[in-house]
Image (cartoon, rainbow over all chains, first blue to last red; front, side, top):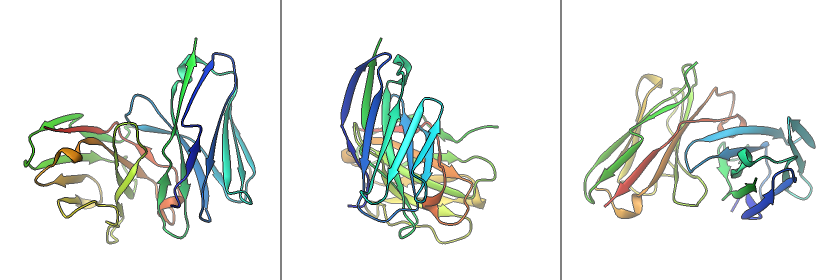
Length: 111
Length: 117
């Protein structure tokens, strides 16, 4: 499958700790995107990193991309209870022209 | 401006009935996508519309599923003769398309939760 495979499936941390989620994929990519989903409803776009980029920041979010290992990581620093959600990586493939989503990581941040 | 809207937010139907789900994309967005998400799972791609091009229907799970996009704006996903396994959240997304579909940020609606009894 060319979809992103995420690790871990579930993560539980204390408020203030950092949370790291990983995404691996099998195909060549144009970009890799991370989305957040609260309560099983609509997704919110967090960050897009292109295949020629290695790292990108947005507020407390840091995304890295290693195309040689076909993997990406999302780091949330100084987590808050409000960060509790599911996080999905999505592979933007030039071959298929589609955005293919992984199965997601469920993050719980305990106050 | 307004985001992507979907209606209804919840739909309960009986097995065998037809249902229509509606999506209003962000004005000016030329690309529109439908996804399905079963409980605790990732998003399953269903169909993709881009401008006046023929839609990419490769993700539709059976011929009971169809979708239209009228006037390049509103889209309707129709499920005929619903089955219990059709129960899921159906998500619509749009994007200001530049180039191929997988290359841009997608903006999601809140979804329609479909329950087939």
